[in-house]
Image (cartoon, rainbow, N blue to C red; front, side, top):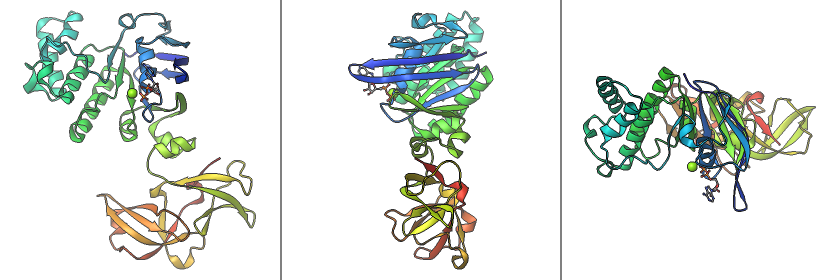
Amino acid sequence: MGARLQAVGLEKEYGAAMAVDGVDLDARPGEFVSLLGPSGCGKTTSLRLIAGLERPDAGRITIDGRDVTDVPPQRRGLGMVFQQYALFPNLNAYENIAFALRVRRLPKAEVERRVAELLAVVHLEDAAGRYPHQLSGGMQQRVALARALAAEPPLLLLDEPLSALDAAIRDELRTELRRLQRALELTVIYVTHDQAEAMAISDRIVVMERGKVNQVGSPQELYDRPATRFAAGFIGASNRRLTTVELVAGHPTIRWGDARLPIARNGPLPPGSTVMAAWRPEAATLTDAGNAASALHGRIELITFLGPITRLDVRVPGDDEPVLVDLVSTAAAHLQTGQSVAVSIPPDAIRIYA
Ligand SMILES: Nc1ncnc2c1ncn2[C@@H]1O[C@H](COP(=O)(O)OP(=O)(O)O)[C@@H](O)[C@H]1O
Ligand SMILES: [Mg+2]
């Protein structure tokens, strides 16, 4: 069973820069939590603080209620895979993985069975006898992951463990990792800068920006209700513009190019205020141009077939960039480049950020 990890008020300063600036984390036993954010936002530093590889300038870390802030890494009862693989150079892939099982004093036959199973999970059955210097970066990363999983630590820290892999095997390993994490009920803190990966694998995502936690939520919550401009820009595709709120017959609207779009009345939006407006490409529909006064009228500039969905780039008068509209492909089959369309966006699908 996984451990509970709590961190309160973590801070780490390098020179004059705050790499981690007041980070709180709370992972439940068996929860898969991702730290997501752009390069340099403090993900790795946060993980190294939890691991005990760095000492925080401020803040406390507890694992299952035990304060481990001053406990060395090897006595925190956690496993980790960091970007640099740190395999035992004098042991082959098989022995690197077996090492973690022998430490746990498993019987010989059990060790053999588990190593074979883990080698299969990371698709390295044929590389069991190879030493680290005979393995590619991606293969070393997979051995490191298998070795960490072999130990079945109650808390597993992973720093971009799939980053060196090709897309196809990365997706497959991601699924395997999630399956094993669930089966073993491990608590995982997973660092990634890849929002699609974080969405696919996590129970909860902690969005980080410049050393601080920006938003915490399930993948769906973050996608449906990004709380900040930053989260809205970082997660999923959005049409975003800086614009102004204007009242039309008492109803709030935003300017979009030369057009005006009604928005839902949720929260204080003083007329004339400059805001960031954002809506998802799939929130829009095409309407009959004749009876859509509040729609965006434009011309299809580009049609991109993406399998189940088709993306339209629609050029709207007065707007600098095309708006993106995602339609179910069957609904887009009859459309042609150059065609005039009216794009309707439900007012409550438009999110407004101050
Ligand atoms: N050992 C270090 N010495 C000085 N600055 C560091 C060190 N480690 C990280 N930093 C800085 O701290 C910030 C956060 O880095 P890091 O935690 O590695 O970010 P991320 O993993 O999100 O890309 C960056 O500005 C980085 O340059
Ligand atoms: Mg990093």
